[in-house]
Image (cartoon, rainbow, N blue to C red; front, side, top):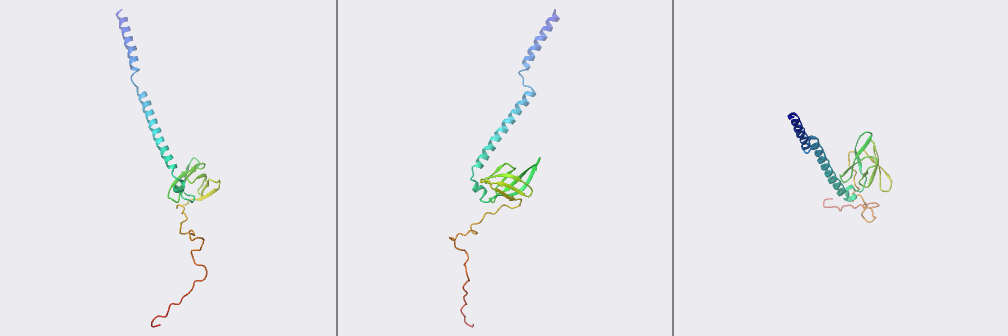
Length: 168
């Protein structure tokens, strides 16, 4: 009979031990908590990045991009998709693949090693070359700001003869 009592006691201890052990976190539980913490941190960083992009998008595009279309500075890609690095006359850059909008406002139509096709706000296709330099804004000096008059005199220039000086 004492054997049966010991067996029942051991069985009771075993059952209560299993019940108590279920409250103790396991390595698997800790791993899932860690994974959840990492995902939350990533979501916070993503939200910060989206807020920064939204703030960047609030910059007037004429000030950020200039008045001339960008040039294509570099082409790279993976899995058959070409990406282009576009450089603006202001020194700003944008990256895009076909279908992506870039500041200006333009939409990338195609990116090749010869250049890129951009579609402007009016639906016109603008071909930009692949080059190492940024586009140049037209300068104020090259524009005619003299009320429609030529900056250079028109017609023959009057010739004057210097007066004869002493000893001439």
